[in-house]
Image (tube, rainbow, N blue to C red; front, top):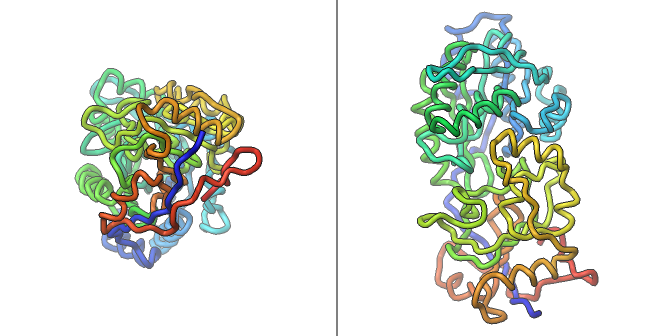
Amino acid sequence: MSFPNMLRIRQHFDAPTVEDIPAAVSEEITRLNLSARVKPGQSVAVSVGSRGINNIALITKSLVEELKALGLEPFLVPAMGSHGGGIAEAQREIIEGYGVTEEYVGAPIKASMETVQVGQTEDGVPVFFDKYAFEADHVAVVGRIKPHTDFVGEIESGLHKMMLIGLGKHKGAALYHQAIVHYSFDRIIRSVGQQVIDQCGVLLGLGIVENQYDQTALLKGVAPEEFVEREKELLVLAKKWMPRLPFDHVDLLIVDEIGKNISGAGMDTNVVGRKFHDNHAAEKEYPKVTRILVRGLTPETHGNASGIGTAEYAHRRAVEEMDREITYINCMTGNHPSGAHIPLYFDTDQICIEKALQTVGLREPGEEKIMRIHNTLDLGELLVSEAYRAEVEAREDLSIVEEAAPMPFDASGDLPLHF
């Protein structure tokens, strides 16, 4: 079977960027005027999540230094629900893998899966919180604000989610996802979040918004009484600056890697058009991607293949890299068992692409609309088939970096791991 030649193109985004992260963190903490709320010698737990947030080590280090300047004694708490198989030491290793180490940040890491019930919502939902964080005098909630991969609302993924799913640990994360079956996502996230703010000594939030190039675009210090309103505002910006595929219709999307460091869903469902259904776009959802092929997992995901079920096809390598137990725990905790479903998988890229193209509909050979991306965070450059050439040339926000060339399969029928 012949395959279309692929163009390498670049997307040009108007992307704001924070140039001096320590200065930006210092400005935000100063603006909050925390000295009236704290006493020297008090402890403060700083949340660190499992997502691959750009500059997270430097952001955390900068925050720790500002808290120390106030006379506080900060420590770090891995805040990631069931990631790492729900094992404390594995969660510690995950944040250390991002460079968030005790030596670099200058604060100890206290990792535990033990929680404390701190109350319950008006609906009777128990509220659980990390034991170390609850015992601290204060809590600093750090999180990236972005559209959620499953839910829609004025508040989606950000500081509230970090308080619930991250600092709720495995026990809280599983419970809240079950509660969402009976109550709305918005109701649970607001009611549990308010209980955490009221009962757990939340001192501040530090919201992070990234641009289309996966760079830090904005850092925002948030007082606890402002969490709801500030998250609404930051989500609007996050949606505006979110990376997107350049075209709304795709026959086959080839994704080099998925992982929890890329998205909670392995690949961002907002990017691939699978937020409401695992294997097709909703009626008014874009892009419309007919088939997805996953080629592998990121090293940082430690075998967690959550979200692989969103794809119809996979390279054997991706399936073999999957840690089934860790993946199952994570997908069941999120009440999304289909996220762990195994796609059709084959031994080589060549066979995978051939099989996938047999199921994209009535396309003449060479006319298939194919895109290849590294992952759903890295969309600055991508490969597209020649069927897109006229559209590329007509748009000012796109440019051709390399002219069309055949897919470079090796003797085994595989493509290079990255283009």
